[in-house]
Image 1 (cartoon, one colour):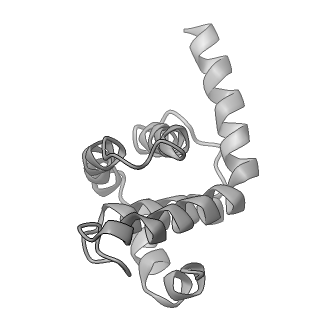
Image 2 (cartoon, rainbow, N blue to C red):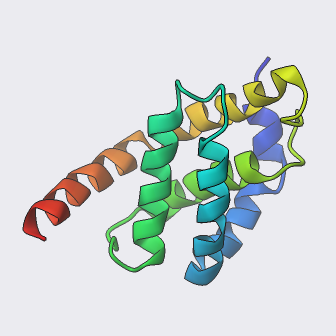
Length: 129
């Protein structure tokens, strides 16, 4: 079952636009993402979620400025989706993380080049500082 078409028909990317235009609001979802990342059953995507969290954090703080706005919306939309308790399958029921994992995998694929550029920038940034 593919959850991506339902995700795209929802208002997740529209909501992402509100977060992208407000760094303070963007910073507010990062602690929620941290709690989400600590859930059991996410070991396969934990590193990807940490990468997304770092990406959003560096953008919100104004450190990373050379980002693709469309890819940013994809990442924010996916993150809002996974931290929101009211998604397609509630996380409280056993298969509840399947839709989340599907959306994260899709977002990683859609934003792969953007996140690779960010990682290269981050490695260079850390080397300089």
